[in-house]
Image 1 (cartoon, rainbow, N blue to C red):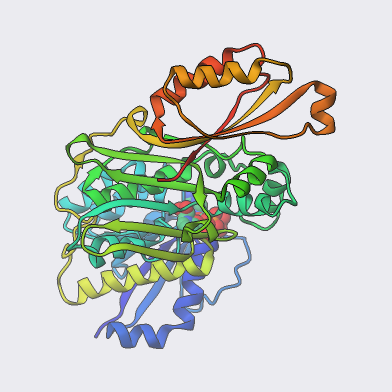
Image 2: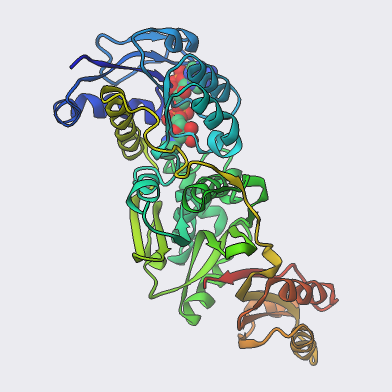
Length: 436
Ligand SMILES: NC(=O)c1ccc[n+]([C@@H]2O[C@H](COP(=O)([O-])OP(=O)(O)OC[C@H]3O[C@@H](n4cnc5c(N)ncnc54)[C@H](OP(=O)(O)O)[C@@H]3O)[C@@H](O)[C@H]2O)c1
């Protein structure tokens, strides 16, 4: 069977991984596909940069349109990242009748309608396994493996950077700033880490997962998100004492006609949950569905080779569609018609809460706290005031930790607003939800 030509836009971590892995596994790929899959053209930004991957016979250019227009290129593989130029190029490729494989979650989450709409109009495929949880085949699982099932909820660790930072802090050796610096040094965090630690990256991924699981679209900016920046070493100590780990979760649940709940935040996870022991920069997804029950998916959520593996699996899939003339066989977003979602309001969500208060250490203050919580029907499961540390003694304040029973987010927020307004409450409380 004749060769399937691939044009690569971008030769960074993932693009280089694609070249390396295609070279390494070429004979297995040919034998699985029944035809050679070859990168014929590559586009980079800086032609002078030294490349270390095997590029014999590959034409290199800095003109992406030369790749897109090349008649030998049947599949355009977008691996440059970002949402501006990548979007223009993906749309151009689709309009030129080229299938697209990408690992760009920001692009797909923010411009889903335009990209998938253009693909449908031009009868071509868009595959994106590398866009969520790197090498873990969660997109294929939701779209194909669970196609007969009804997804009820997803709890995922989908941002490796945040998991790496929280895992280091949990060891008790690092503050948030030190853990972030370590993540940057080890290549797990960008120079500007805000999208990772603020929950933006996880919101992009959750937006994609929601569509695949429930057949509706929630734009990433409408997903409730909290970052991991406010968590201190003390919180790990108390979480441990209550029997929890702190993990960066992306959560989506279906509430029937009341809509879809979708949120991203650091979360107290019971130690006996598998998600509690997902270490370092690893990713994992725990899916509950009607027929299968619980299932769990774990692995490398980023990195050149794991993500390249997902990208090449997509290239193989598209190549199979081409050779069997079955393009468009799979709905790219799992369902034939994607509706815009009714969003289940965050304030109606029920959760247990962990809260660390920094209070003036004088008689009567604890009473005020318990009264306010009681006023809003927030029931206390545990309340701890530790002996003061030397710093706390010097500043005449004390840390008080409250773990609540399940309560409506709205009620808890109102109580916290009143507590924050007390002149005895010295800093903004640290609040974390407990997973349910
Ligand atoms: N890295 C991961 O672990 C990972 C995991 C999952 C998903 N992803 C996604 O995969 C995509 C690629 O990530 P990456 O880490 O491989 O990025 P990267 O290392 O920064 O590489 C980007 C590549 O794109 C090229 N490029 C950038 N702008 C260009 C332009 N305007 N025209 C032509 N080439 C351009 C760069 O060229 P030069 O080499 O000449 O600078 C570089 O080769 C992103 O969407 C990312 O979100 C990455």
